[in-house]
Amino acid sequence: MGDEEDKKKPRVLQMVRADGSDNSCITFVLHNEDHTLGNSLRYMIMKNPEVDFCGYSITHPSESKINFRIQTKGGLPAVEMFQNGLEELMGVCQHVLSKFEASIEEYKTQKDVNME
Image 1 (cartoon, helix red, strand yellow):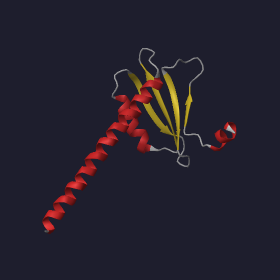
Image 2: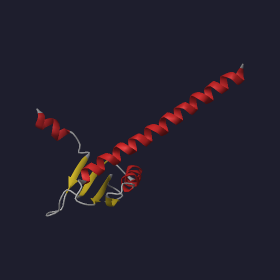
Image 3: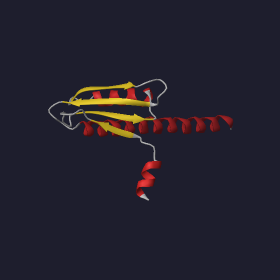
C-alpha cells in the first residue's frame, strides 16, 4: 500500500547533486512553482553570509518547475540553508498576513464608528 500511495503523489521537491560534489552544493527542483517562490526564497537565502551562491531558473515556460541552486561556504550543508530560507520566508509572510488582518479589523471598526 505504501508504494502505491507514493506512485500517486506528485513530486514536490527533488534534490540533485553533481557527481563528486559534497553537500555544500545542491540543486533543488521545486515542482509546481514559479518566480513567486523562486525570487523571494533566493532573496532570503542570499541574506545569509554563509551562502556563496544562490540562484534559480525556470526550465521552460511550459513547465511549472524551478531549479534552485545553493552553494555554501566552508562545506556547510546546502539543505540547512534551504530550510532556513523557507522558515524565514514563512515568518515574513506570516508577519505580512497578521498586519494585513489587523488593518482590516481596524478599518471595519472605524467604519462602524463612523456609521453611528
